[in-house]
Length: 311
Image (cartoon, rainbow, N blue to C red; front, side):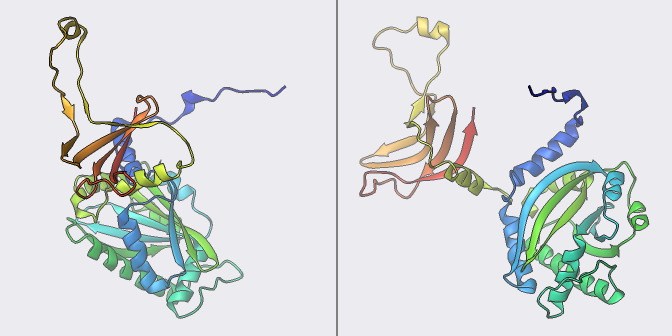
């Protein structure tokens, strides 16, 4: 018989309210592996201008740790790019997979993206090529975030732990965004180490970003379950009454909806729509009726999906 041990919930890391809010904001923009906001997709297209169509980028994970643990977890040979967001005092550290760094440099020099057979540190010339590439991408970011209240600036390439230790307090909380990278047949990763203070500053000025809203995620989530059969019914209005109000009703009384969604004019339906799933208490899908609301030849209406509500 298997020996089942209870999960040690008491040992789980506890987050402060501020840390939880920051994590929630990031999770809103990166809700699951492979799903990233339009902003990242636009950046990917910009990078392909320099590395070709063989370059791919996929969001993988987000987690929280302090500056000291980040440095302790670095491999023996690492490459980190240090970037400033002027006038913010904190630095963003971009950890780039060592092998992928060589492939990127080879591609920038006109090669196919080759990687050395034996691991070794970067030469000064290779660091210069990597710095040139980083400055190019920071310029692309500046173009995508024209209204941002800060300026990107490349600071340095760090390949020694001592260089990174001097950048921040050991206990400074940081958020880490990890992306999986492909350049031809070479696979690697890039990890963004972002101080929580920067996340707070960015989230307070979300309009500086290019379409960080992600309504397409809900559509893709629903599409992933299109093989499940369920009851779906439309809700055109709703009224709620207390027990006391119900007792006062008599036959013939008129009750006005306190919520109403679509409107009917002739054979045309317009406005918002809420679709309930199952028995109606599992969740709902909100959307707007597309076009003029005229039924299609099949007798159906097209609805633009806006959000999914889970009860």
